[in-house]
Image 1 (spheres, rainbow, N blue to C red):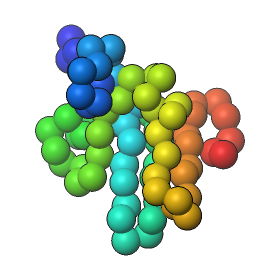
Image 2 (tube, one colour):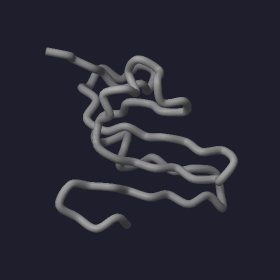
Image 3 (cartoon, rainbow, N blue to C red):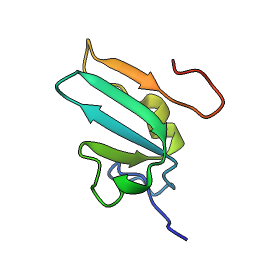
Length: 74
């Protein structure tokens, strides 16, 4: 089994979300854990635990899109 931990320094929780940052579009996308993010195949992506993913926010003026299974993006 592929066990992945949160990317936040000092956090030892299991990661269950991937956050992808698009600096050019000033966009932060929070979604389900992506298989490729661990290997660095998705540039600007970080694996986060549920509490850190819920608090993820970009700088002032950035858009945040959250994709959750079974829910419409908010």
